[in-house]
Amino acid sequence: MIAITEQNHAAGRAFDSVAEAYDGLFTNSLIGRAQRSVVWKRAAALFPAGSRVLELNCGTGEDAAFLASRGVAVTACDVSARMIEQAQQRRVVEGGGGSVEYHVLPSEQIDELPSQQFFDGAFSNFSGLNCVSDLSDVAGQLAKRLRPGAPVLFCMSTRFCVWEMLYYLAKLDTKRAFRRCKGISRARLGPEAFSVYYPLLHSVSRSFQPFFRLRSVTGVGVFVPPSYVEAWAERHPSLLRLCEKADAIVCRWPVVRVLGDHMLLHLERV
Ligand SMILES: C[S@@+](CC[C@H](N)C(=O)[O-])C[C@H]1O[C@@H](n2cnc3c(N)ncnc32)[C@H](O)[C@@H]1O
Image 1 (cartoon, rainbow, N blue to C red):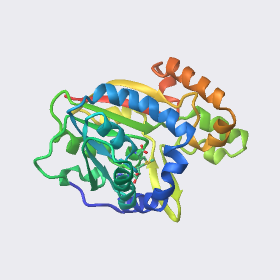
Image 2 (image 1 turned 45 degrees about the horizontal axis):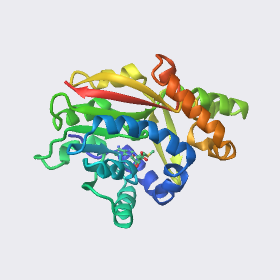
Image 3 (image 1 turned 90 degrees about the horizontal axis):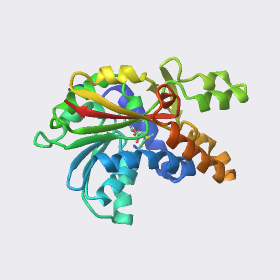
């Protein structure tokens, strides 16, 4: 187990500063909903009612609430105390069935969960794992908590997002257009800067070996654009729906599936 790092502190403080606005900016946006619906479809198929799922970087708890409403018992963790507060408030306001337990905990410290807690699956949505510098350390800790055959579903930002490159190149902003291509960039939320990592698919898969095997990869946001194009989506809802239909066709195609905004990895505990 590793100690909480300056990177954890920085990411935690950064997401603290946007926790209250996060649902308005992303969760409830047309694009956020379109991208999340792809993840929910896979999550619903992999995590049946009655299973116990560990959710890493749960943010404001949108996915935990979804899984709990389907009878999944969720242990939801996030490094940002304000995000966890938002998630807890959501449960109070919205109610909702099922069971969710919250922990302010970085993904790098899964070992700190109570030692008797084991899970039937694990889940991480929308790039929380892109804030982790050493995925193999997370893999080792996660492996100790999962039974053989347990499904794991991770949605991570890709290294190459064609939409992003074209969008920023059209604005002559080459720095933003290629910000992911080096594999690491500095992001800023509020006053706080932190590192974001963009590992390639084979590198993520390697980090999770030998404990996990990759079962499938689905592109999320190939034609559907990144969330900062929300104003366009609001002006053209029928085009967005067309993009969703196009994504449903191409999302499993080799190469294409890792050129969108996110890639959805289904792994399995060996
Ligand atoms: C883009 S948000 C996604 C939130 C949520 N999963 C969703 O789908 O809306 C990324 C989340 O990752 C969390 N995060 C970043 N680094 C983390 C770390 N090292 N451990 C745990 N959570 C982390 C942030 O606090 C933030 O809530």
